[in-house]
Image (cartoon, rainbow, N blue to C red; front, side):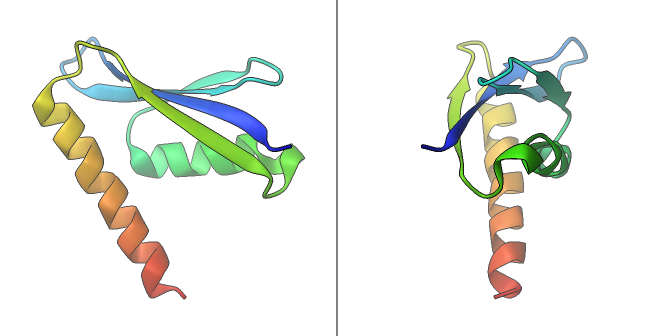
Length: 86
């Protein structure tokens, strides 16, 4: 059974978005400022579980369309970079 992480997109105090990454096994949390930070933090937090992890995404209702689009663009860029490494 995979370790479950939650990733919740939230509006921050400085008119940007952040991702609250939570390890549901031990309730560790970290705030990620962008997808690069998210990727690094997820790698660090999931070391105890190997590759057997699952990330469940959600977002707060007040996340703006602009911020959600920006997040989506960053996710697409990371996916593209990973696909090039294959």
